[in-house]
Length: 294
Ligand code: UTP
Image: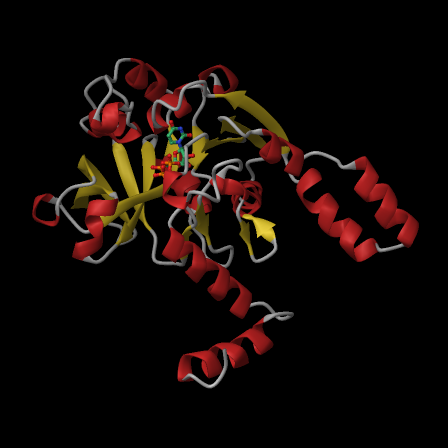
């Protein structure tokens, strides 16, 4: 498998006004836009062919992964190789492709736009505003399970019961493996009392190409949008021999940069762990929390 699809065409309304003229995936997390972490994760798992599904304001996304001749020439003339390397990091990362979603009719609709590029092979979907800490393994494990089980794979995170209404929740059955469950059903953003489990579906999927046919027949669901969850629900029931759905349980660090509070936590946590910024930030933070510094 070599292809990754990154839907980044959502309106990002939770982050207005920052996202009025810029996609939320371009918000910097320390010193890289969120989307670069996601592309790096795909490449790290061996998926070097990346298709981004973009919406309005797509220019910033495309430009970030393109060359900037003027900037490169200026840094070269100054002999600033360290900064030049940072500029090249995103340019040389992957084989980038772009497709427009048109109207933002939902995540399922965005994935459907990838059909032509992906063709008839399994592929990964990584949501552009969900960051998985590079020190924790998720996508690689999902790729292994997809091949082993010849099924579609979702990523599951156990959340507090009061948080489950923010996610798609999965009904699951145990397999012999503690890290893998069989998904028997899914409910999009359920009330706490209606949730089938505390397993939240997070923004990583490895899908069989049969998902495209299912999506084509999926009517608009919650919010009038074509929901990927609805298609996965049909696939979990394996109605048309689509292979079923399994969940890989993730126990590592994950940041939802589309949510304001989670975004702030991501910036603080990732900066605090960095060698160049961490020591000073930690010192300042402990003083700030204790009320000694402003
Ligand atoms: P969200 O549910 O976070 O929606 O989308 P959103 O519109 O981006 O953000 P808010 O809720 O208004 O703040 C989940 C993922 O699906 C993509 C988004 O870019 C995000 O990665 N998406 C969503 C699309 O690509 N197209 C859509 O029509 C909807």
